[in-house]
Length: 197
DNA sequence: TTCACGATTCTA
DNA sequence: AGAATCGTGAAG
Image (cartoon, rainbow, N blue to C red):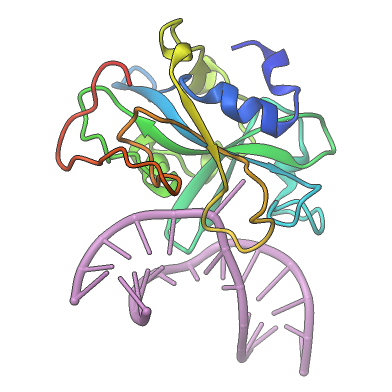
């Protein structure tokens, strides 16, 4: 994934991340990877963004250079992972909300907290550059994967700026955390994710 | 020092 | 629909 990819507004990067791979390798230990099927964009122009009010120690990473991970703890129990975007000194990022892992239960990483848990992401990854050397990185989607239909809808779990349609997901994937109103694609329980979504 | 609050998940 | 859970920041 080229550096330039992240130097764009979050709402442009977010849909482009759908279909990309997130890959984690723990030293020479086992490799885990999957297809990103759901993302949300956040930018300091709107009140739902962590960087909307002021720059603090907690949200500092979001203001930092694009191409890094921004990880925070939510509700005391779960980590959420973002990709920092746009430009330095400008808070914006893309929240990774769901990933389909081929061969695994299709709901195992379906939600930002579950995703981070499955990939072993925690505070140690906060402010870490996105690179293979750091054991957590992104790779471009296959040509066929990038052809799939993407749904654009409103973000969830927030109180502010509900009017923005800054959530995107892969329509055909059953690993999406929550579907838009009117999207009747069924969820199956206890079935495995396919090689492609 | 105290208090209220989540970019969530699980259970009923 | 409601609870669990805890780091952070604002208030006192």
